[in-house]
Length: 291
Image (cartoon, rainbow, N blue to C red; front, side, top):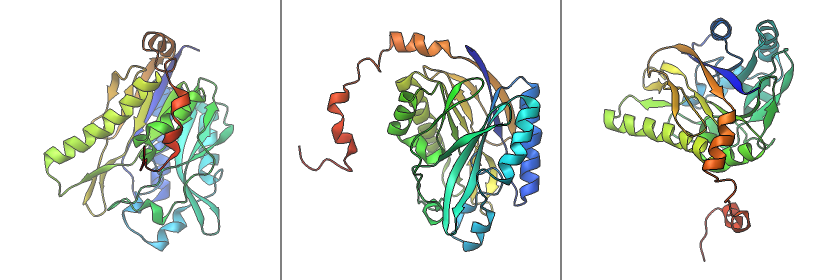
């Protein structure tokens, strides 16, 4: 299948699980009605972004994966004949938790999960308090409509993650995300941060010759101190923007992508051909102290 229609659900979240899952299901239907075949939800869409504080009570939000949310989404996926990408707070065992994304095929089959590899620890993003780094490695999933790679939020700053996923055969790279601005920052800083976020992900599309789909949330959280900046987007295999969402509105959009473009751009910009894999061993070091 050459042409694939991807759906992005950019939404705000509330404290109540049912409100969030019902909203997501409603927007999945909207995307499906628009022709979406693969639909991506934002990071941790079933709750507020609880990592803005270190609070042991928040561990009660976690669930098994697969579990209740994937069961609900599997029914919708089968009914609507769509692939769903769902970011969830996974309880793996007592005291062991992950930031995890499940992939459900268009017949409702649970295909597997990816556990976030890179875990941040910044003001209002205290993820190391909650999440153990992923141990499943980088993953690709053969869905009905395309072979997809899934990475999560902080992973998007690391070219190594996108490269490895692309080398595993991913035809599309999806990034469920939750990132925003400190409302005390000046506008120039806000814009610089957003531009950097978009640029690094578009560069993954260029370097690997695959489309990138990034889905962020919107709205004020942490008592209004954190504004999630939305700005979800789709970039084609040369990094060209095919869709760009607003910074402050809930939006569900569908974008058609031609997977054959990857071969065209990889032939004319042969970055994979010219890789010097024999010279890359130093990349496994934390820092190169000596030549």
